[in-house]
Length: 257
Image (cartoon, rainbow, N blue to C red; front, side, top):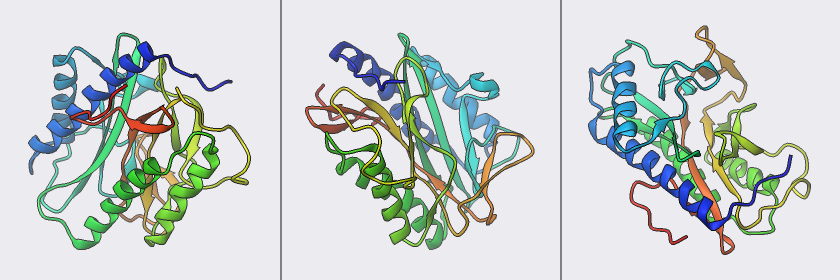
């Protein structure tokens, strides 16, 4: 399937969906507190999204029960909202999507709950820093496999490993579109599709400490590393405009489309 090239009016719609994602993540960061349940956090996120005129695109997607993936501590991605309470020293991944006027947005953060260890601070920083490093290095004409290599190299140089079998993806009038963008190089970097103006896609480094093999828990959703250790996840939706990557999922957009 060909990778879509979005027209300016489509980019505007994608930017609107993305901005609501960014605002929702900021709202949750500022209002999540010790003692809340994952379900309460999910409800907060859904209410905020709807208040801003969008739909929570994860709700019901592939059968997912919540609106926000709430991934606690060892859970890297796709954590389900439950009655489990968060406590001081936890780290919490929040991944959410929106749909408005038939277009989608998607982003994620991993946030500290109160004071966390230096080790967890470094783990979170790796996911966040690798994401922004990759975005800064995107150029029209480079291949997506080169982007995967940039992500993998950064993560490994920090002493961590990228989770396998899960990846970034295209986004537009569907929440997941072509291409798939792993956080590691699969094959040779000089193969595969090239990045072009008008493409819109999500990058989402998923960072594990020692083992890169994913294990899906009994809820059929939550993904942990085989090492059983804490992990982190960050994500932005980006558009390629005038030869560079523009982040669409910032809480306070700085781009001009």
